Image (cartoon, rainbow, N blue to C red; front, top):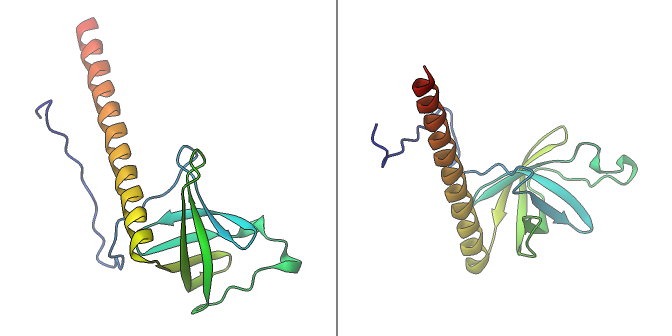
Length: 147
């Protein structure tokens, strides 16, 4: 394998229904969904949908009643270190207990901003993987030289 090439492999599943790349936020790149005053962490996000988990975040006496086919106006906060938001509508597609899958409905400008954010996150992930790969190779070379 040449030092100038990095190979990434993806597993394609026969039952995959998604038509867009998804990102899964982590502590370094969090995403939050605002429904009214309620802030909810996003589990995954693509250019045409998102998923979130309510769990214990909602006081069940005042629980949001979210049902399939329901549409809600929301905001997506793109990371903790930025004030960047996207205003959109979500349509609830599926509810499994407290886990929701939704379709995103955005205007052109919001869709463009969302796609750029996803591409930037993909690039960051690739850079991190390349750096880790280089570090692993360097560690391996150092171990071989020690022997």
